[in-house]
Length: 226
Image 1 (spheres, rainbow, N blue to C red):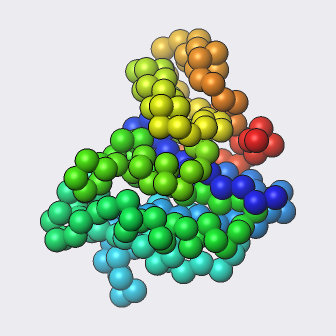
Image 2: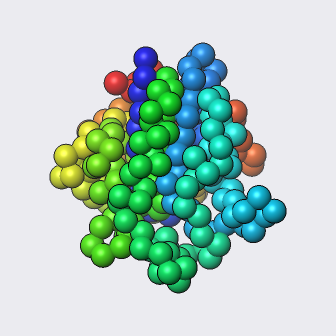
């Protein structure tokens, strides 16, 4: 087995990295080798080793293959702002080509299970008129969608699924990450998502006090992926 997916979210701050780390951990528990990439990250800390992003570090911690931080996260910015704005302030042009090579190198490791994580939602801008969805298209990867379950998530999820299909990519599965457990009519909302999203639900992750990769993995089903 050698499977790779692009993981995106319905918005920013929907727990995309938490779910990605959980999926990688579940793969490791199943005896699979793992690798991951986060092509661009903003909101990084200055360390003696260089800029480091907490999300990229979380992914790196769940990679069983030997990968360096720079391989997982080749482009990092300190300000916690949209990547294309951070790149502009740093005097860089953030293009699909600048991200494509490093992510192809991660995929070339041929791990049993590889995740490439975007930033924010599906249409996060890059330079000119490009967006991170263009990178997913260039990599030709099936997509896993993290739905941040809260008021308004149904429309966000369905619009994202439509955009993924329109871009010629397969929605391989989705995860319900319940970030607002007091959402009105929670079960009805989840049922509507299950009825309307054209892919299997890989799991429902409740709001957790300690959302570690190990804990999240307990709620996920990798065997539902093609």
